[in-house]
Amino acid sequence: MKTTNQLPKRNNATNGIKAHNDNRHYKVGRIRMGSWATQLLDATDVVIYDSELVHIYKKHGRELRSVGMNAFDFVKFIINNFNEIYQDDNRGYLLVVHRTHTSDLAAISLHVIIESGKEVYKINTATPINTKQLQSKKLLCANDR
Image (cartoon, rainbow, N blue to C red; front, side, top):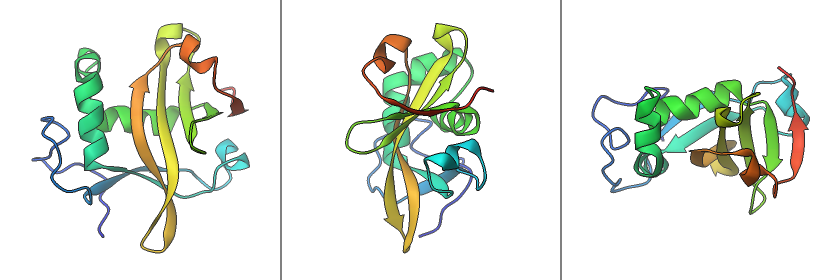
């Protein structure tokens, strides 16, 4: 199965149409070898499926458009800028962009899957969040950027 780094011009994620199949996915980043995150996470690719992009668009499209982002850009922003890792439900991880202002919080939830015989991280969802929502989560690792 081919993984691409960019959305095609005609795609379900930017127009909110439900994906008819769940096998089109995109590489949005990578947990890099030697980075602070590898204290906890394996160095591997991070992918998102079309259906999750549609979900993010439908749940948070208005908020994202207000800051000039689409679902794909939002996910890439979090992958490139996360500075905290929390324990998520169901043995997953919550990657959080945590800045000094409480309104500057964003998170993605991801789980390990096997794709073409290789472990990758699959994004389940992404959301703007607040500090109250993080209080019930266990902080596993942080990086002061």
